[in-house]
Amino acid sequence: MSVAEEAIREANARFYQAFEALDLSLMERVWGHGEHVRCVHPGWPLLCGWEAVRGSWEAIFQNTAEIRFTLSEVRVTAGEDLAWVTCTENILSETQGRLSVTSLLATNVFERAGEDWRLVHHHASHILAPPAPPPDTMTA
Amino acid sequence: MSVAEEAIREANARFYQAFEALDLSLMERVWGHGEHVRCVHPGWPLLCGWEAVRGSWEAIFQNTAEIRFTLSEVRVTAGEDLAWVTCTENILSETQGRLSVTSLLATNVFERAGEDWRLVHHHASHILAPPAPPPDTMTA
Image (cartoon, rainbow over all chains, first blue to last red; front, side, top):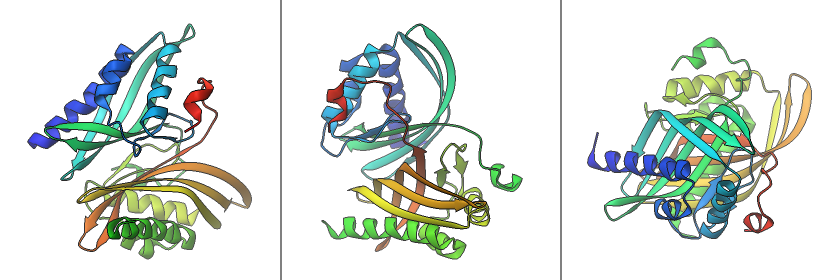
């Protein structure tokens, strides 16, 4: 793994640590703060710009009693100044007294900021059943 | 708009033209062909590597009689050698005799290939209702 890939993997892990901690100030340090920042929470419309994204985390943190992530299949592809990560978020959460276990797929885009990498886009969505593709498309 | 941004916007449009044409050879020209290529069709598990992604398009094209995209809110953020696009896919489709209209959110990641840009990741998901955030988080 390259130095950049390791740094991106760590930045990705810090995002989920901030989410688990339900800590807005940690989340602020994970994200870039520009107008180009975007976010798709599962099923939500697209949020554009850091203010809207920050507001969404504030709302989510207020409505979440506890959330625990186990990440699997974390794949990092790094460019010069941008990188993208896909991972499976295996989530144990309690929202308004209700406990749930679910798996989401996430695409996270990071932007280089010196030695560090900042999250600029998060797109998470639920895994449902595929629409009956031939078996050979599902093996890789 | 920069020259790169325009080229990325065109590459993004060609992806949807290939999808509308249900033409696998056009789709092959739009995508990068590496092992790092990935794809999340709405609700599907993650597909990894060009062979799996190509197989999914073959299956989708075989099961789709007609599909028409109107894109809205196409936003491009370009780096040196990677770029990411978000857009709303407003879709009119006919699958197994059933006509449907739906809106999806897509994240498309492109990789520079000389003057051209190749799609290396597509993540599309349905827009549902947001989980009751405060109104101010939804305005931007």
